[in-house]
Length: 133
Length: 263
Ligand code: HEC
Ligand code: HEC
Ligand code: HEC
Image (tube, rainbow over all chains, first blue to last red):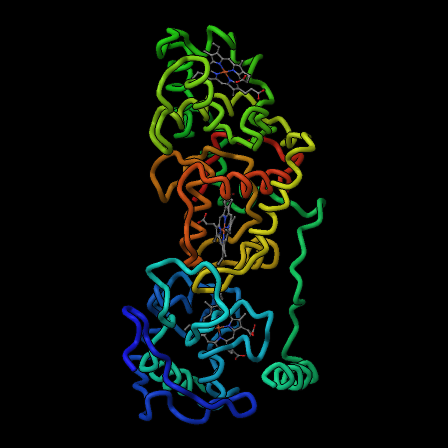
């Protein structure tokens, strides 16, 4: 079936425990691109997080430092944390980057699309997995 | 099914010490309330404090000129009815938004100025965020500088304050955040380089260095709503006035700082 105009279908995924084992795209992401995506302010990560980014002067401190996240979590666990962190902690302030339901009063220009695409999620997962302190 | 799985998962996470934050956000206790001023660098505070270096004073001075100008079909100036603003307007801004009986709802200071233009000067309302309206609002509000914020006690306002508070607490937008998530739960932290602060509205209109101009409280609120990627409201919308009203109850007792300076 064709999608409604402007809407982006989410790819199906399976949650096992606190993880999504399979890549959302069926292919591994690109860690170099992932680092760039994390540092882009419009993707919002560094508004809240700090990390091993010596070149970036303005980093947030609302959330844990991303350094070492690949040591603390597997790629599969990182994937669920990006897709929908609220499944793990319903009170979290971390947005669900790959979710369309359960949102209220979304501005028209952001409506019906996830914050990040499946490809972007995979690139970021690949990058975070390299952060082993 | 998903709910049950979430509970199991949540208890595992709690056992592992991962989940810490309470579900229900709480308001800041009176004794811990702080103006945005107290989060600023010493140079920015000095700029606000010194009338000769505070850029907002330019609008205040223009407001004083406009106060004395005859306007509209009635050919009257603000001063013709209200006289010397330093006595007639003292303390007024400290209790705005206030209840307007004929309209049956709260109006903010800019709207009050425009009501006087329409009702009493028989002139067109001034456009929001344009120089003249900001200048008149800044001039009127500056007459309350240093006085404690003292919200209008009209009992009719209660449902409007409640609506503003509900909006503040409600998660919304693509980022699924509520104002409270930042301004009650994380005011001691930083969003990228900016201090989050407690969303105290005791200095408006204020000069924002990022804007390079004076702006209203509603302009500031619209910025935060955009940041949440939520549907925004037009200037003057009842929802924004209700939010202003709630914010002033949060700032109760804090000195009016208009024209404040903020980064
Ligand atoms: C509005 C704030 C906010 C934003 C934006 C945000 N996060 Fe988070 N993030 C958090 C918080 C808070 C936690 C702590 C866990 C929790 O609250 O569930 C967290 C946890 C994490 C974790 C697990 C950290 C650990 O080691 O325990 C990772 C990885 C992560 N975030 C990555 C990201 C990435 C990548 C982005 C951007 C695509 C992002 N976050 C955007 C607030 C945020
Ligand atoms: C993701 C975090 C975040 C959310 C959500 C948020 N704000 Fe803000 N807010 C900020 C930051 C950061 C600043 C300070 C920006 C600066 O001055 O550079 C700010 C500034 C303000 C100020 C100015 C305070 C002063 O001292 O003048 C007010 C008022 C305010 N916010 C109200 C709100 C309201 C109302 C909402 C919800 C509709 C909201 N904010 C949502 C982060 C947030
Ligand atoms: C012809 C008389 C008249 C003129 C001219 C006039 N006002 Fe008023 N003003 C009033 C009256 C009467 C009220 C009480 C509310 C009402 O009936 O509208 C009022 C109320 C106000 C208030 C609210 C006071 C409070 O305690 O809540 C402010 C602020 C104000 N005027 C500012 C102005 C400004 C600024 C101008 C010029 C742009 C102006 N007024 C012009 C008659 C006038």
